[in-house]
Amino acid sequence: AIMAVGWILVPAEQKARFEAMGEDPSSESRLTYWRAAAEVAVAHPLTGIGYNNWPAYWASVLGGGRIERIHNSTLQAAAETGFPGAALFLGMVLLTFQLNAQTRRRARRMPLWGDVFWGMAAGLDAGMVGFIIAGQFMSVLYYPVFWVSFGLTTAVSETSRKAVRATARQPHHPPLLH
Image (cartoon, rainbow, N blue to C red; front, side, top):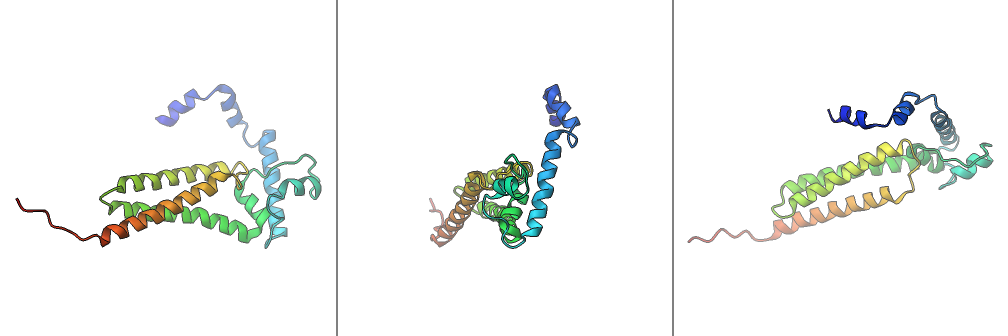
């Protein structure tokens, strides 16, 4: 129902863009960049072409003329840092979800602040899902959003771990009898 209402609210120009998707110049250029990035990754599998070197590589080596971006963060990682760099990037994405799942499990056992930790972990997961979706159509590998999110995920996970451990060390006192 939400999607149907949302579709009604989409302007006609945007609907026309969706209908032409895949055949419009923007889509065709992205497919060209993606194919070129995949070929570069295969040609330089271990080291890639170097950190943030795609625009210069595209313009000079590939003869692309105007400096362009890959418009896909995973392919950008593979082309610029090689397959090891892309694997590390994807591993960090997966680690984010794993750490947030651990934080939510810990949060269920916390009498104080458990709801806060659970909500922060869930929010960080939602943000990562948005980043992954956007990152398939934009070059956002080096934007601080991912790196700050990963840092926050690590901090929330570690803080929740320490909070659970500190709570376990506190002596349990039975309630006073009246």
